Image 1 (cartoon, rainbow, N blue to C red):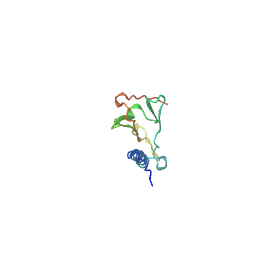
Image 2 (cartoon, helix red, strand yellow):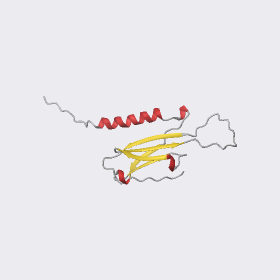
Image 3 (cartoon, one colour):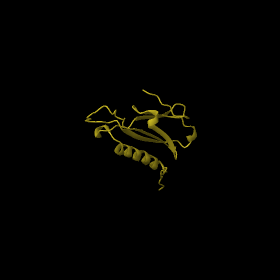
Image 4 (cartoon, rainbow, N blue to C red):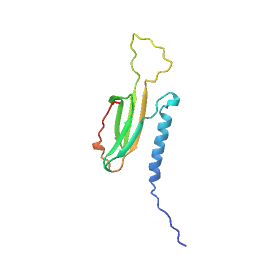
Amino acid sequence: MTQLVRFQDPFAELTSLHSQLDDIFNTFLSPSPSRGGHALPAIDVYTEDGKQLTTEVQAPGFTPEDIEITVNNGVLEIRGEKHQKEEPKDKKRNYMVRESHASFYRSIVLPKHADADNIAADFEHG
């Protein structure tokens, strides 16, 4: 009796594991609204022509200076951090809650054919 053995890509599980670990670390290491912090910004990754990959991140309250975009070993990394604003010296406020510091980190594994030297970024307020 002949038995068929299905071949599975041994690296497929690794790619899935990387994505799952990224989600876990982002969930536990980033502040969440239920813990008095901020949620991760919404992210969309898509292609319209099968060639150019577009990533859109919705990060309200962040300025272009607050966001850093890098590519390391085929992974697009998007970091955002905004700090507390300086208080005017003439104002005395007694805060009950103050959430003016926020940060996030998102990463996307790029396709193997991605050209890291031709990555461009645009920033739109709104």
